Image (cartoon, rainbow, N blue to C red; front, side, top):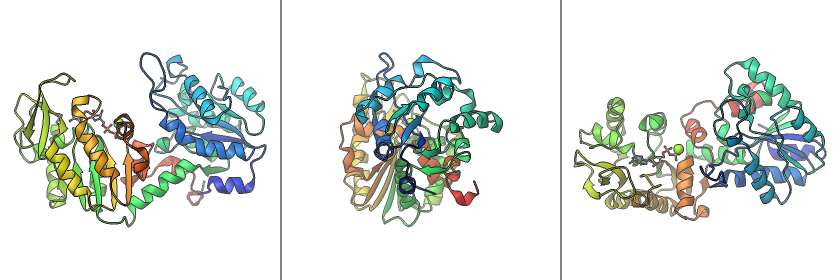
Length: 401
Ligand code: ADP
Ligand code: MG
């Protein structure tokens, strides 16, 4: 896989470089303002290095899930403004993805200038299952530039036109963020320093069973909290009240518990509520005695202590998924406690997952205390599952492309 440094060594002054970045930031529902610009910041090293080398930079990105047609609600306008602020320059936004306006604005770029294309998902072809449809869009995107740099780690698990097909049409390189994410994920999957502890939470156990299966043979301990712990507790024949439960996954969880031979660690106490609300009536209960009329919305303090003790001697940690409904203040303590224990680990600590990364920032924790905060939740989980990621395969020239 050729890197950005390889491209810089070749020389990019005056060349038009199409960069696929992951600028899919959360927007405030009322004002449309960017609520967390972490992904824009993470895209800067690649864009800045190209500008410094005199490239004409054309950035392609998606935002949200528009239905394959222009929709002002998903315009990249606020992202262009923020990207410009962070780069200390003006970043014009093309009115289209790869149409007349994009071509005109790309032709007008001077060395070191940056252009942002409009949301690639305004074109239905971007996410099409049909190779020819995606190919036609990729032809137009490739026509804007001389080389392609993929820096959109959060999208490498997608076989989309701007991620996959365009790389088949231009000399292609991995950007700095993709290289960094890959480096960290490789360290998690091959010969990690031990003890290797994985902490999983979040809402849906079915989303994460594949990664549990893949990681179980490799880890020393797997700590399970969040909404997914209740399906495991049910697999131990405990009642879980009205907590999240995926009844069709109970048998799988029972088998995983048996296979793990004690390496899966479950909560011992749960913070329950009478309803899903910030002003709900709350009570702490043992994890094996959740009353029928209550729902578990966070792990309890004894569990935070237990998980902290399991993490204290770890040398490699991967954490994905909040321990509770951290968005509501009364149910944030479990996530905070585990986030602090993960940040205190000596060795490699990795936070993966959009909501987990948001929790770290929202709870005001020090981002620099972690070895790495991944920008791509789905992509990192699929990598750890051992699945092939189309956006990475296509960058790897040994694959024949
Ligand atoms: P990530 O994006 O980090 O991979 P997920 O998307 O899997 O994480 O899960 C995040 C969501 O899980 C959060 O919105 C949080 O409120 C929810 N969650 C955590 N614990 C619970 C729980 N006990 N009950 C319901 N939802 C929960
Ligand atoms: Mg999420």
